[in-house]
Every structure is written in C-alpha cells, then in structure tokens.
Length: 51
Image (cartoon, rainbow, N blue to C red; front, side):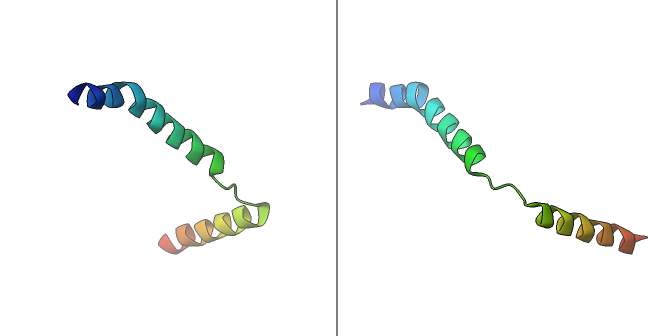
C-alpha cells in the first residue's frame, strides 16, 4: 500500500497539478474593451479621490 501512495505522490500528482493550472489558464475569460475602459475609469476615480 505505501508503494502506491508514493507512486501517486511522485508520479501522478505533479501532472495533475500541471493539468489544473493549464486548464485554469485556458478557461480564464478576457475582459472586453468596454469592461477594460470601465475598470480603468473606476481606477482613475479611486486614485483621484485619494489626493
């Protein structure tokens, strides 16, 4: 039994973690132009209010 656990930890887990990271990067949604402009405008407003 411990041999199978060690094999999973060393042999399979790194590939599983890499797969999850790659999947998350591929599924990440990009902001549209309007969303980016709205984000930038709100950021400018926040920084202007701090002065």
